[in-house]
Image 1 (tube, rainbow, N blue to C red):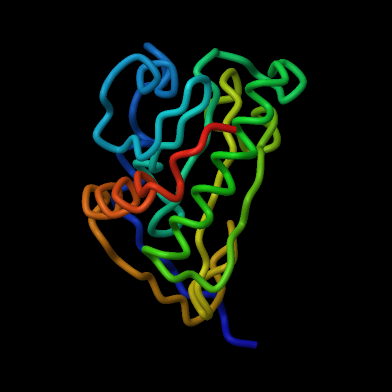
Image 2: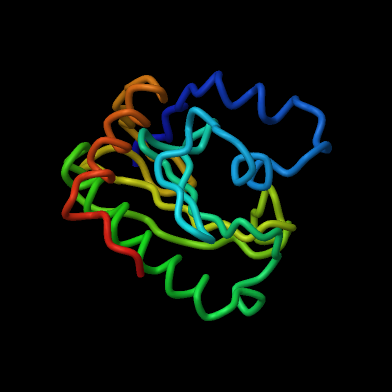
Length: 166
């Protein structure tokens, strides 16, 4: 068996080393114009992860600061699913992934970096890139600046065929 090869992601050091506190990143994004926000709904939005596991790593989040899926009202639940489907379609168009990892980390022990504000991870995947969390041998990274990815996804998600409300 080939030993795992390191995946260098130096931009994640800013996240790991930064003090944790202050305003919630999702609450701040819901209130203003975050440059990584790619889709704003009435109660749920999608933002690029500033410290991604893969290019195009999105997080969908309710505007209300809630910790668990059961805390969402029916409109937020429906909008979350609708925006997920729109984001998957837009990412297929813009990034051409072979698949996706979609998931929730509920609670700090489950890996939630921001356990107080529910968010759904959407990670595009390509053949031979890497596993969702652990990095396997012969890893390749597909690179694109976050701002370029955000602009491309915003354009795809704003097309008339993807304008419908849930």
